[in-house]
Length: 246
Image 1 (cartoon, rainbow, N blue to C red):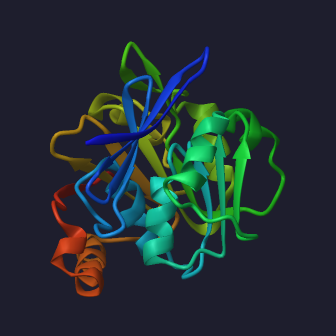
Image 2 (cartoon, rainbow, N blue to C red):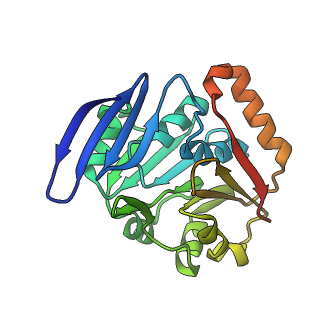
């Protein structure tokens, strides 16, 4: 694996590394993002953030990504769908610069990258609602990734407030325990279905909440359609486990 770019600031250190066709972002030694244009699903956490988007009723969704990192989720979404609009918010302007320069997140009128505190930004946001919201808000502590904000009543209801009537929300939890203890585990906020996703080798649990009914065969169809479109090499190492949340 080759380091192709490095930057040191008083707050953080950054490295962009290349392994084959994969581009990886490390901040303070923490693995933040990876994207490989030849492998839409490659057995990483970002697969779990992508898959639920393909179960939306809206074919050209308006997407909000809270915590852009290197932009892996944005790149995956653009590879498999045609979002009408993508808004990405990240507190670290270096992440946003890396997303465009190295990960290839395009600059065009339909993609807006905003350098801001995502929590404050969403609290103040008064624009159109989103069909798909990705909450991937993580920082790092002693080399370990940690969620920036607990999914409590205040944060959970704020996220749900900005969804369209048939929208979907995905939250990346750092562990199975944090997903089980979240506000949504006991208060469904008018969501009609939810699924917990995990990948072998990662402690993360991603839970996707939908305002419409979804079922397991739909996930199978999504994976099958991606295999047909990109070939087996394009979904290599896909081993996401899916179980019903409610």
